[in-house]
Length: 217
Image (cartoon, rainbow, N blue to C red; front, side, top):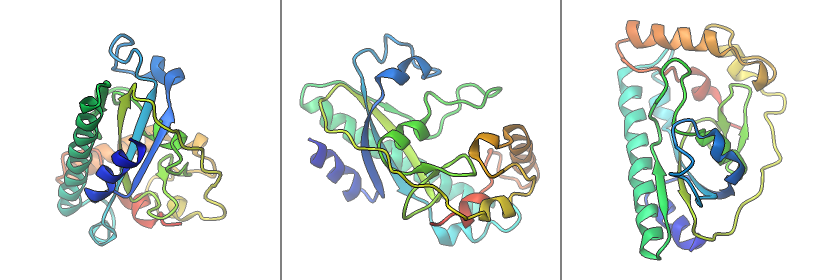
């Protein structure tokens, strides 16, 4: 079923697919009660590439064009996660598709779970200086989603790579929120700028696109 699920993802236009054991992460899924995820010890991680051409419009911040594209990529991920879930259920197993982009705690800015951490374990990429997942081909120009399941599947391994000497995201960040290590990323400064963009750039959503645009390994 690993290959079949991967085929579903790739035939739908996605860029990345991997599977990870997430049993020890279940208690950290912020908005998913433990009884809801009981037995769902594997996470199927999927990723869709963001258009480099659309990102070119983001010169000083996000654009309406980028906002629309951002939403469409998330929709594609959610639709694909549903298809994967249905394929799993057809085989008699449980599956829980988790929305690609849905904030459940606006103060903490957290979602149902960290798609990034599942993707990291599934070998889709590494955590860049911008605190985003970096795919070996797409860079940070990728959106991700997760399907939790109890179907026995082969798991992937961590990708042993990093950003090396690249500092493009540090150079382009308008509030200097990105540092040499992702652990030093200034979340508060980044969030305040996103709020500004949402209001002043008429996008109404917390997006930027600048560090994403320049991140390509």
